[in-house]
Amino acid sequence: MGGGPLPVAQIKIDADQNGITDKPLRNASMNLNIGKKKNGYSADSYWEWSLPEDALPTRSCPSEKEGIFEEKGHLWREEDSVDSSSFDGSKYR
Image (cartoon, rainbow, N blue to C red):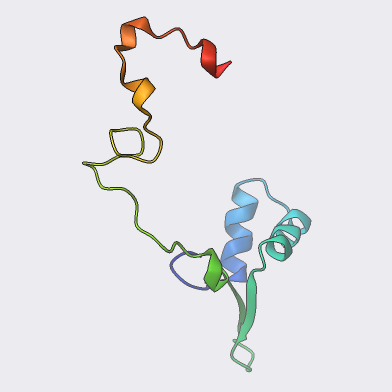
């Protein structure tokens, strides 16, 4: 749905293939504030679901040169830059 609205029939097929039944799918759609819209009014009309506007990403991913764990990445810390052979992991337990 990140690429736009999807027909509910397709969403249900995908959910079924992944072991998700109708009730959990409906509950998830309510919890995620999924937009629901009927497309058309004739016999060939169908329902579409779409993500709310605030669910779409608002910023780009870090570049390859500045990853999240590399220097200046948002998870990098000065104390983590020591030689990895001396790592004991005790501060992460």
